[in-house]
Amino acid sequence: MMAADPRPMLTPQQATEVTQQLYGVTVREITTLPSYIDQNYLVEDKEGSKYVLKIMNSKESEETTVLGLQTHAMSFLHQHGIPTQTAMPTTTGQLMSMEEIDCGQGAQTYCVRLLTYLPGATVAKSPVTTHDLYNLGKLAATLNKTLLQLSSPNLDVLQRGNILWDMQNVPLVEGYLSLMDGDPLQDVIRAVIQQFQSHVQPKISNFQKGIIHGDLSDQNIIVTPLTNGHHEVSGILDFSMLTIGCHVYDLAIMIMYIMLQNPSPMDVGGALLAGWESVMLLNDDERDCLFLMVLGRLCQSLVYGRYNVSKYPDNKEYILTTAKSGTLILYKLLELGKREVERKWFTDASTFKQVIHVSL
Image (cartoon, rainbow, N blue to C red; front, top):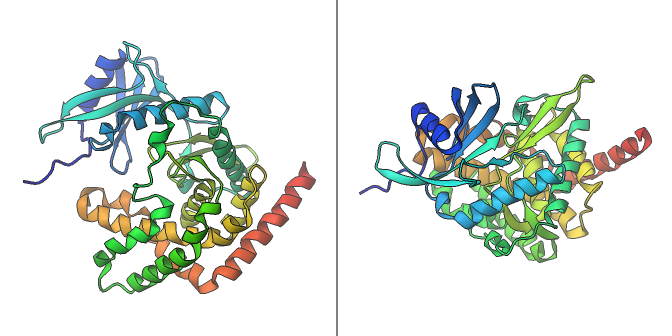
């Protein structure tokens, strides 16, 4: 017997009823928002106020302590001036509610939260400038630095080194490479994994550690345009990968995803790096491993994307977002090589710092 699909698949009618019952909100309009394996609805009430109804998949909904910490972290960051969503209380004062719902394959329990709505478009869909990227790098490092002050008796549950997507687990990609049999990309990815194992893994113990977002992708950062052609970050979304890890992972993840949609992908790293280092300096080992971490995350995304499409073919377009340009960027980075790419990133970052300093 096949296991039930963990993804919530509430109909708009079910989502409307849940919102009204739990939050006392009279729903005027409800529309679906994209998601990987959770479910998001944009909800508008009769006064015109907007919210996001987030329904977690049934597997992650079992980890109530982790979900509680994610909710707490979002609120903590919001209080410290980071643009994050916060959870609205239910009519009984709960910030999250475990709901048993039947989506057509028997009742499963899903964690439901109604989050504040943040306006803007994803970085993936916005023509961001290098100046915007500098500010984004700065904000991401500030987020990491702020999370160092987060306190809770349950912080140890964020030791989630078993997450497949965790950067330290890049070598686990090897176990999924059979999906790519016959694809020349398979050997390229295998070679990247070997370099990661020999070059990055021995140095991870020297990386600076703390609580990290874990998934600062171009889909999880939203911006709004300013009148001068630049953008400001209006939201950091989706804290489901919140974990205790190495700060530099967040930087590498951001560089990799933002390169995907950028018309000048090679200019992304330096701008993000300059912004990041205006708040949190990398040490020598982190600088030396940044290139291979960007490659490692790219390999994770390409391989796990293909794996998840085999499980959830109906969500193929969203899951394979990386595949469109990711393969080309992987080849481009490897063609230029570690030394050349690092030279560009670090030179650009240093030039950027001087320009920013002068403009201040």
